[in-house]
Amino acid sequence: MGPILCIAVCSCSYAQSGKSSSVVNNSLATDLAYNNKTKTREIPVTQGATTINISTKAVKNFTKNYKNAGNAGWFVIQDGYLAEFKKDGIKTNVYYNRKGLWLGNIRSYFEENLPRNIRHLVKSTYYDYTINYIQEITVDRNIVYLVKIEDDYFFKTVRIQDGEMDEFEVIKKISKKY
Image (cartoon, rainbow, N blue to C red; front, side, top):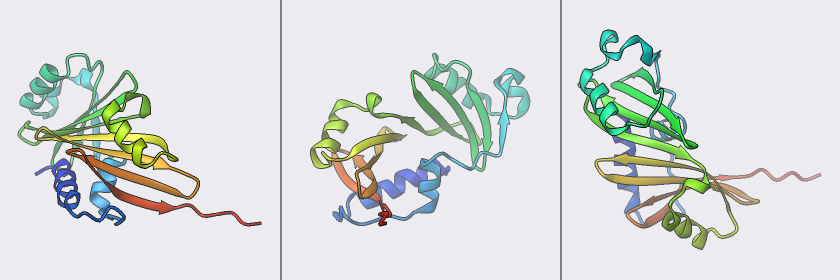
């Protein structure tokens, strides 16, 4: 299974913990969710994906489901392929396995693109925090939101799945005393 599935499994397993103040430290999920570093080789779309060993199934799926993607970049990753594009301020990474089957996608954006119900959920609990960045992870019709927020004392990432919210990551800011 691709690395995107790791995020879904990690997200599901912690969502039921009931410990909203716990800090989750899963470096693979964090690395993938916070700007995937597993890209090994970029393949320009203009070369024709089928001639450079990208599954035709992945290319057909991408073309069908992301008609308005524009000029996407393709990458070879550890367990398959990644198509990446940006449209209307939203960066989208679409993951496929080696056989060209869709595994999931990660959409990264700012507060203005966050669905109102998710924004309300975050702001009703963390009303003194600023929403900085969002990653929306979709796997098998399940959507998990990782919302990066901050106040004067903390950087936090809250995870929202199925209407439930927990703290995925908490980093205390260093105070400057003179």
